[in-house]
Image 1 (cartoon, helix red, strand yellow):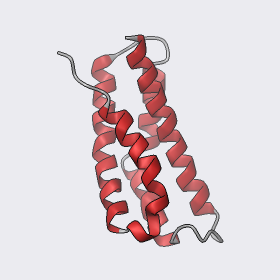
Image 2 (cartoon, helix red, strand yellow; image 1 turned 90 degrees about the vertical axis):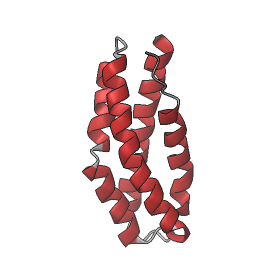
Image 3 (cartoon, rainbow, N blue to C red; image 1 turned 60 degrees about the horizontal axis):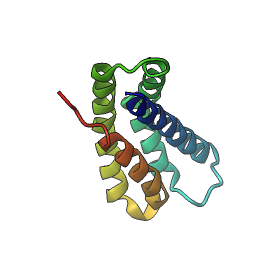
Image 4 (cartoon, rainbow, N blue to C red; image 1 turned 120 degrees about the horizontal axis):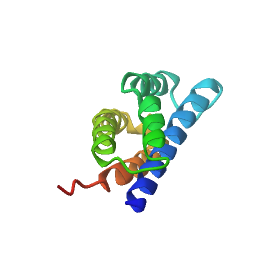
Length: 117
C-alpha cells in the first residue's frame, strides 16, 4: 500500500499546485493569459469544492499510513469538483486553455485510484 500512499500524496501535491497557479494568475491582473472574470470563476469553484481542504487531508492521512476508505472518499469528493471545473474550462476553452494540462494531470491521478474490495 506504500504505492497508494505515494499516489495520494502526489495527487495532493498537484491539487495544491493547481490552486496556487490559479491564485497567482488571478492576482496578476496585468496577465494577458487569462480573462480575469473566468479565472475568478475557477478560483471560486476551487473554494466551493474545498480543494485546499481535500489536499491537506489527503496529505495528512497518507503521511504515515494508508487509509484506503477515507482516501477514496476524499478522491471521490475531488472528482466531483473536478468534473465541474473541466466542463467550465471546456465551455470557455478560448480563454482558459492553459489550464487543460493541469486538469488532465489531476484527472489522470484521480482516476488511477481504483477500489479493490
